[in-house]
Length: 168
Image 1 (spheres, helix red, strand yellow):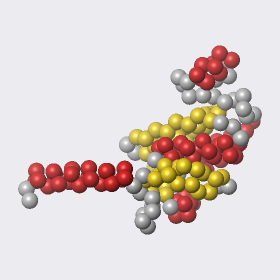
Image 2 (cartoon, helix red, strand yellow):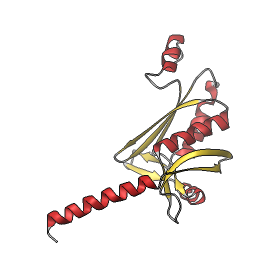
Image 3 (cartoon, one colour):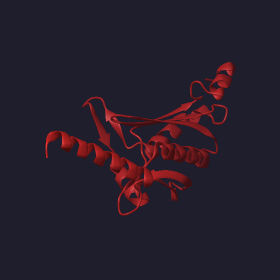
Image 4 (tube, one colour):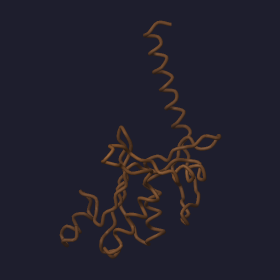
């Protein structure tokens, strides 16, 4: 097989794999961390393989987790980039005491972050306990970077409202 035909074969095979992944998307309900999660979008789930939550699925998990654990609504922004992904969670400062910021931030990072960056060695260290949870639920749902903020996402109505009150 010449080189051009080989490249065409690889491209067509990759396209077929991506179409199969889209077909394998499903929504599941499960319980984890004492929270009942509903309608979490996952692809590649079942058939003995470990699946992956979609960005929409991870965002929904974060929203449901904050609502169940802390009794407040939140804004969630998920971003995917070449070497990982990030999850930003925003809570209205009028809904919770700011004294809890550190506790909530650590809780969210423990629940949704799969490691931490060590600037001294310029390496990202993976957490071992994440693998056990992944096996338990059957899919991967963690983000590389997780941030928690009192305030609102820039450009939203809530942001403008909090800005007017001097709370953002």
